[in-house]
Structure formats: structure tokens, C-alpha cells
Image 1 (cartoon, rainbow over the protein chains, first blue to last red):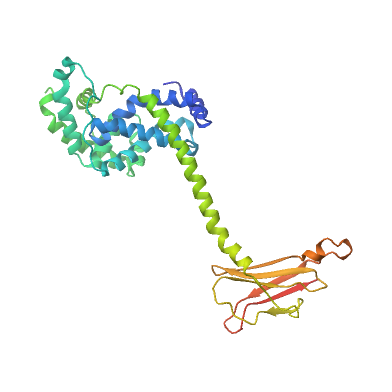
Image 2: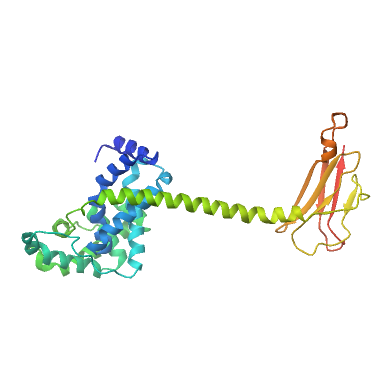
Length: 176
Length: 155
């Protein structure tokens, strides 16, 4: 997205009620947020819902944001909380036609996607959250640890254990 | 302790991650954000109203039921109410003495005493006889006394 100063001014405009500024923030973060939500839930059908709820909560609470330049990490914090809440709710059947793909893509990646979904879903939430934030790579270990309520060292341990387990489950897709 | 990165696994997971943003996602988010903000405003107004009602209702009820004390219980010395209030929360009014032109009231809400003094209505417009402000006020509710007592001292 734009440099930090631009981001801060767009966030300030969104806080002042500019719908256009809010739309720009959504468009700038939607893809990475959906990816993060997938990592947090291990459910690609739930990911867009979690991302949407995260954006809505962020918009409602945007006056509480202290540092406009920290909008991204603040959004990620809300996403983690939203994903935790959604995981506690009973799972809904996957909607049809949401993930439209071409036949070629289906053949090439469907097996991997399913295996990755299974691997992520099999992780305990604290390991899955750590891996999702590590994959995203926007936060340092200290920032991610703070977000998850643990130390930077504990965060790295969680990521390591999560990677080891996912690597084991996806061994067939990895080249030695 | 250092843990090595696993770029190969991370790349594989990136390949497996959702690639596309659902069509019309940003529009849906903006519309839902607007609706969420409206709902939040309504909820805040409702909560503030409910809180105001909760806070003010006992005070208004007490003021409406405040009982006057006989006028001979004069100010300038301790005054008391002969009857102990039945409720833990109460308000009693000590009518102003003629010289002071003050109305004083004492009450208790949720275990906290309050004391007030204000110019009595009939005197407040009289420039020639301005009400005198109390120098000090003290009130108490004692199990040894029949009712709440209050001392008001004027200069």
C-alpha cells in the first residue's frame, strides 16, 4: 500500500467518516486479511466471513485506534479475536460457488489446498495462530507474541512446532 | 534458542492459500461497516439512556418523597428527624430558618450521605435580604438516634 504517512492520512480520513477512505483501506488489506483468516481458522470458506467481520469491527472501533500508522497490526489483532470467536461457533456447511476456479487450477491445486486445510485445521489453535502470523510476516516475533499474549521466544517455539507438524502432513508435496 | 525459517513450507502454504478475493467483497464490507456503525450508535444511545434512568430514578424518587421536618427544629444547631427512615436510602428536608433563608436537605443513597443547601424560594428574589450561605454542614445517621441528624452553622 502507500507509504506510512499516506496510510496514516487515509486512516484519519476513514475515522472522520470518509467512506471512500474506508473502501481504500479495505481494498488494500482484503487479500492479506483473507489469507491471514485462512491461516487462523484452517477453513477457506470461513476466511472471507472472518475478514468481513474484522473489517466491520475495525470500522466501528476506529476511534479507539491510537496510532494511525499501526492500523495493520491493529487490524490483525481484531482478526485473531474474531477468528477465535468464530471457531467457538458451530461450523456451517461450505457455501457453494464461493471459490470459483478453472478446471486447470482445480487439477493442479485442489489436492494441495485440501491437504493444507486439513493440516492447519488439525493444529491446536495456539500453534495455528502463531503459524498464520509467521506466514503473514508483517509482524516481528515480539509484536506477534504480544498480540497472542506470549513472549517472542514462546511465539517462535509455537511457530517451529506448527511448521514441523504441517511439514510432516504435507511431506508428499514438498521436494526433498 | 534459534529456529530456522522454512521458506519451502511457507511457499507451499502460500500456494495453498485462498488466491482470490470474493467478487464484490469490498462493497459488501463497506455496506456492512456502515450498518455496523449505525447499530453501534443506537446501542450506545440506548445504554446511555438506560444508565441515566438507573442513576436518576432513585434520586428523583427520594426528592419526591422527601419529608419536611417541623420548622421549630431550627438551623444554627443540630436538627434531627424523630422518625428513623425505613429504607436504607432516604432524603429528609430541614426547612430554612427565617434568618438564613436556606433550605437544607440530607439524604442517603447507597450508603452515602449527601447534604445540600440552597436559598429558599420565597427569599431568593429579595435583594434586600440575601440568603446567607452556610459556613459548615455535617450530617449523620446513628443507630443511637431516632433518625438522621444534621448540623448547619451560618456565619
